[in-house]
Length: 178
Image (cartoon, rainbow, N blue to C red; front, side, top):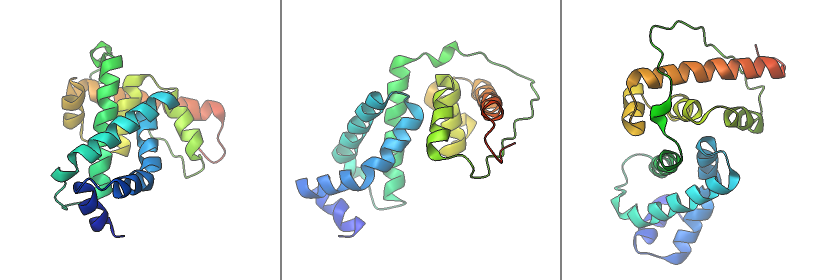
């Protein structure tokens, strides 16, 4: 079955198509949730809620752009809503006029589990901004709006996240990373 056929059947509330859609995207979307939410169980809860929203709002998908990207956006937003309920992003330190070299060259030497482990060690604000900026590709203005923080806070959280990740990579002495 093509993706377009799958979407159309899901729009008609076809249970088999919904199950197939869940099975096709759930593991990848769980990875998205896990980057934001530390606990495996909480990430599963976010995944279920997010996939429920995908099914409930699938009629809004107009076939423009990537369907997987559309699902990803819903799961990122669901993860952010969960984080907002649990954490106050306004309690972050805002740094301005800072000049820190923050280049990390991971050169594909880190395994996915190593990266997740390092991200999970970051404070929630750092991890969230890092994920949104580096992995999801959002701009600082968008991140600031999503998290209801200032643009400078978003920028400083990213700088501090990169600095902390670099220190952790150096401390763990991952081969080929420097």
